[in-house]
Length: 549
Image 1 (cartoon, rainbow, N blue to C red):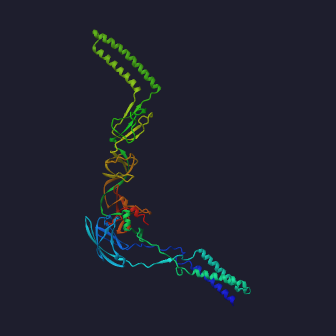
Image 2: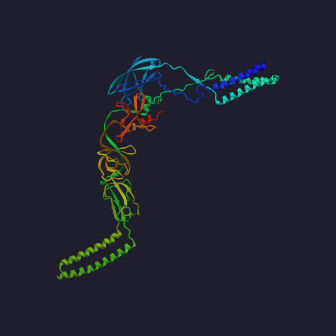
Image 3: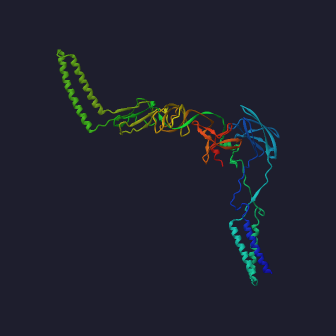
């Protein structure tokens, strides 16, 4: 009987072991499904708004920290006087260095609802706001098991132990009762099986002494389950979030044109050599880039080199001139002698003298052409924009040696595809974000690469602009379109390619709105669809809000 009982016990322990291995994968410990996300667990707070202010009070210890902003712009109000009617009577909030106000509130630690009246006074306006602060009951302490469930390795071990129990039961039942030495190992293995099963059934925190606390969630920016973004007021101050009320109006329709900066042809010039010449610097050296010069300043000298054939020609010309000068000198001497006796007219004598004078000037100019260099002068006053001058360099004919530009008089040449009727005003946006005011000069009639050139003058051009720099021109047309004007940084692009703006729907809540935009000017875009009039649109820090997850 005893050996039969031992066999049944071994079979029963094996069954328990397999069942425990099956039960160990439960309650999400080893399943593929992930637990649901944890919602925001913010500190107790209240928020209230009027047409002037937006106020948020957050409980911190035995006090309330009050954050006061302008309702429409979300600008911090730092120099206000805030008096609050509390359960302890009228109290005055004291300003803190970070821009918040601190109000003692020991009563806020007691669960319940408390009606508060805030009186806010600034230099410009005063307002009264009322709200109810709800102090919640303390949440019960929750815990999770420090080590719930078993690993897949333990399940394999249990299966092996269970199989061993089955083998022991089979051996005992097959009549090995005559061998007493077998019972001791069988009983020991049976005890191990039972002990392992008992350890496995202690799970889910039932028999564990230690428990790990749930993770705590404080006031931090995060995306909510409905897609909105929760941004606490302290975080808004750090991010410098600003808003503006959306107001629809009729605006002039503008078009984007590619453009580049060119010099004003009436305030710029080129210095070129008329023929191939060797360059040499003037006294003081060649002018450097960025140096200001005046009209008529000598920038370089160009010495025309003479080839062997040119030198022989000049020698022949000089010999001919010397011979002609000698002949005319002798004729002049005879004419002077004859003129004294009245044999020839005085007019003939003067003609001879004039001929001799011309021959001598030609002879001097021939020598000077070989010896003197041509001075290259600045045609206009301005700044050296480019230079190719090197001492000893042979400049090609019509090669540009210097370019002179007046940096205060620059143009923008844009290309208009389709050439809509322009009204005259325009703005340009540089790559660094700067805005340039433009005035229309004229529209070309001849196409250039299937586009009409349009010239604009830059009004008050900064001196650090570069020739050839590309800009985007936003030109006014005669058409009008209705929409909401917003800064360009208000519109951000999501990962799916949608253009969105963030609406400040409540004190600490922001919602993304998909919008359709058109260019308005270099600093603003026109939202033609997606935003309702009166909504508070974020105008600063939109890109930072778009990164919150």
